[in-house]
Amino acid sequence: MRIAHLSDTHIGKRRYNLNSSPADFYDAFTEAFEIALSYDPDVVIHSGDLFDSPYPYNFTKRRIVEDLVDFSRKVPILLVAGNHDYADVDGLSPVGFLKVVSGDIINAEYRDIFTGGGLSPLRVDIKGARFFLIPFVRDRRMLREVVGAAMDSLSDGLNFVILHQIIDGFTAKKKNMTLDIPHEELKGFHFRFVGHFHTPRLDRDGGFVYAGSTEALSFDEYEYDEDGVVKPSTRKRVFIFDFDSNGDYRVEEVLLRSPRPFLMYRMEYPAVEELERRLSEIPVEHDKKPILILKLRARNVRVMEEYSQVINTFRGREYYEHIRADIVPDEVVIEVEERGMEGMKREFLGEFYDMVRAAESMVESMEDSGMRNLREKLMEFLEARYEDREDSSD
Image 1 (cartoon, rainbow, N blue to C red):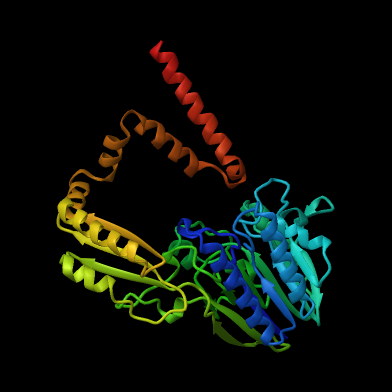
Image 2: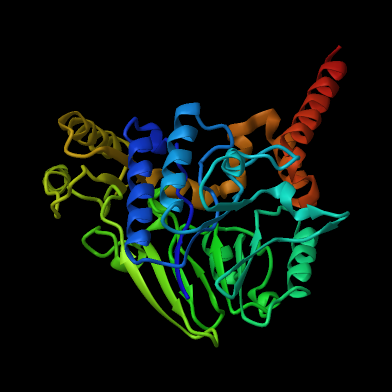
């Protein structure tokens, strides 16, 4: 069985508030599907975050639905809703529009796991293989129950699971996330196709793959070499798997050409002339203007201002699509080291410091089942604290 895997297309994303971003994400989406279809797969898997928002523009929804219907006339498409695809507690998402259109498209929304009073994944059989579709689940107890239900209905043939979660410690640590479910608890499946983590990662020992996003939402999805160019190992891609009847597989990773290039320049105490020279040298020919990330160390605030003037000049020259500059003067570094980050926070926040710390503590201790109402709970908490302060001042 041949399976093409992609994920996290985040259609509609406006990265760094750039007007060009929605087109970038759409370009990567269409290229990824075109690559997948060119390999004549038995099925294409999209493991979540089709859209960047649960409320995409109507034009965006219609265009994506039309494209997916067209793609699905050539090969079945399996999708699961990611955390960006829905916000309401009833689990509805724009992905749900695919249920009412023609085409060989099967998608799983959050509400689809509630069946007959219990919890279970959406199950699909294709050419002797069984696929279990599990949309993003915030509650870890519920996630384990859904996975358990899948284990109880494994077929005699190949069994695959598609989900949008963090399932291994490396990715959790890399993105400062919490592990949703260990991959050891998914051993009953021959392979796991996962979304949510945006850097591609194939783990042969664990038997899972993160396809990664098709276009970078931010610079930290990549790793960079000493020249500031993205390392090939972290570039955007589509995975093509060929499984035999025993679950053994061959895999090909096909790099995408359409994503907008990123460059990362790290410089400590550069002379102004050196900074100007480096900014004027775009090292690689690109079809699209790169996004440049600058990490600069300055000796003091005055030098930092000189760097900022040079950078603003280059912004006006439009060599780059966008320049993000993080400039840290030693004066600030020394002050943080001497006084500590908490001391800096206390001085900056003043009378609101205790309130913010209490709110942070509440968020850290909140159970996952309460995360859906995080905004409401925080607002109630802050409003109550504000009312207490007003009452005490009367």
